[in-house]
Amino acid sequence: MKFKHFVIAAAVVLMSVSAFADDYSFTVTNNTDTKISKILVSEDGEEYGFFDIGNGINPGKTVTLTWHSSTEGENCEQYFKAVFSNKEESEPQKFDFCEEEVAIEFE
Figure 1 (cartoon, helix red, strand yellow):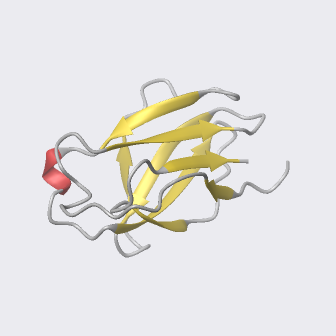
Figure 2 (tube, one colour):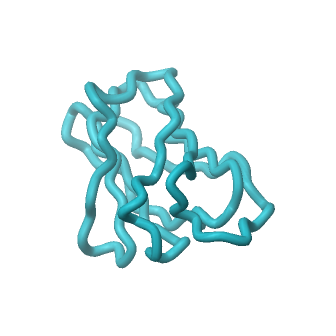
């Protein structure tokens, strides 16, 4: 199977408040041919937590995810990766969630 890559598809205006406000959201698009079963995130690239994405993100679909209020006070820059239904993982990439309208694509 093809190696999975990240692409940032938006965002340049910095927010003046924490990236992790109660209603802060971003989009994730699955442009692969394999379902995404988990989205993992980490401040340090070592210990990962996950977003609840229900039954996953099917190929060709885009979903909106929202940071939980418990993440307020965390760094704006977070490592982000996907776990696919075939158990493969994308390489972790660092994203700056202090930017507005962050859109992440898995290709």
